[in-house]
Length: 436
Image (cartoon, rainbow, N blue to C red; front, side):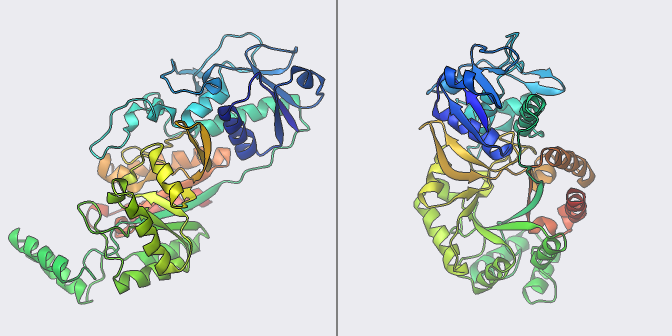
């Protein structure tokens, strides 16, 4: 068993040691504040404090961050060491690393910088260009996992008998069903006003296509569900479908939860994959709506609903996770950016969320995703082949550390029509690359 000495134990210390050693490296450990206990221990051990204790020990110099119980803007200067970005550096000659790997990991995974005043976009979301990962060009690297591997090597070189359980790489599909069908099952009023809008803009061809789709002579371009299930089964992948069941509004435009065709679709998909709630845009201001939407999905599939992803990736820390915890959501898949690909929390393994305001580890497991297809096509205006190279590079990064590679796609983007021409091929080829 690994023994970790630290001069003082805090909630932050317990959290980050459990994340690094218990979750990522998967090894047994215990923490001690007793220096004699540390000195008398003759097996694998680490000193995490401000002073070295023994010669040739594994000594990680501790900055103050993990011993604090308040939030302030720390001084951060990112440099490069052994081809890896680092911060919270030290110049202690006895230190085994030139930076505090535990404080750095905590800063990133806790999303510390999102608690400090920052600029937000028009949807009141944290802007990725405010993060140190974006500013220092490591957003597309799961650097916390990379640092964990550095720690693992240092320990193993000195104590080769220690056991680290291998964490296996996984490719996980997730789909957000914002609008299940482009034309079908919309009801009289929505269909009528859609026709009026097309007529007003002289879009007669679109009117013909809509009519043929409604009456069944053309396939609805958003109806790609059998294809999605087929891909999942062909590659033997886990998948989660998130269904938007909020009331119709400016940003929530799915079918009514009472629509029998929509309900049948949800039930059908739940036979092949996990389903979760896609919390509506409106629920961010009307928190009582969240429980209503969860209950709607629960009644349709007759299963407990424990998985969530926020519509529009509306993640406001720590309040979003407090709201999810109150309605017994245990797993959230929102941790990522709409406008940039990469790892928002700089990690590619699931982790428990830490509430910095209250200084405790929550029961919400966060599943960070690597990219959303709309980031490339709509925000960055990339061609499919340009996105493919970035996706493959991120897959390589996650494979190297045995993490979870989670992609986010929508049913409408797999139509292979109009603005989504060529994207279905990228979907297939990157899955093939990521599973080979």
